[in-house]
Length: 227
Image 1 (tube, rainbow, N blue to C red):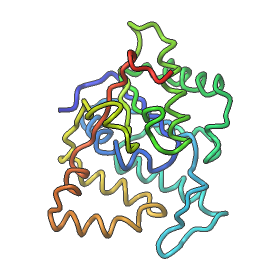
Image 2: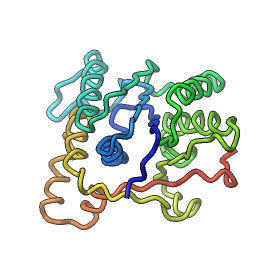
Image 3: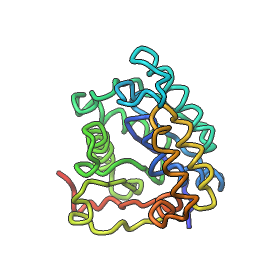
């Protein structure tokens, strides 16, 4: 069951990061009136996919992905989208203190009781890990009594070995349609997979349905701090 929060801050580097792992959760929070702010650091302009068949090119992809992100937020019922203006595949090279201040300013403004991001070192992509490091560092600097809860996504091959099984599981089956709509909104990146997934859902494939209907998080454990 989704817990009522004061405000939820979601921080990811790319358009569509939210779609795969948290779109049902975001929709569920919005359904119960919880404000959600989504800070998306880049427009994913270096994304490998250009649609299938291609409908984008390297010049048009940033604007296309910007519009896809807006459409995805509409599908989730999210009305506070922040596009932070960084360049795709460069987050790992940004100044650490600059990124920490960016996150700290967002937290100060929105006063979230929950922050959602990736787990540093266990999120595969360098932009994912760099974003997560900035979030963790910003929250760590807060007084312990004032820190928001930190829910993280981790999917590196050694995740279970390092962290165990996810300790937060949201049943978002009531919002599965919104999750599908969010995924479809990012058509330049997801059209290639959606036909296959829809076949699996129709066939009642258990793994595909589990992925669709449940979203899993690790509550960040400060006693296992990555630094």
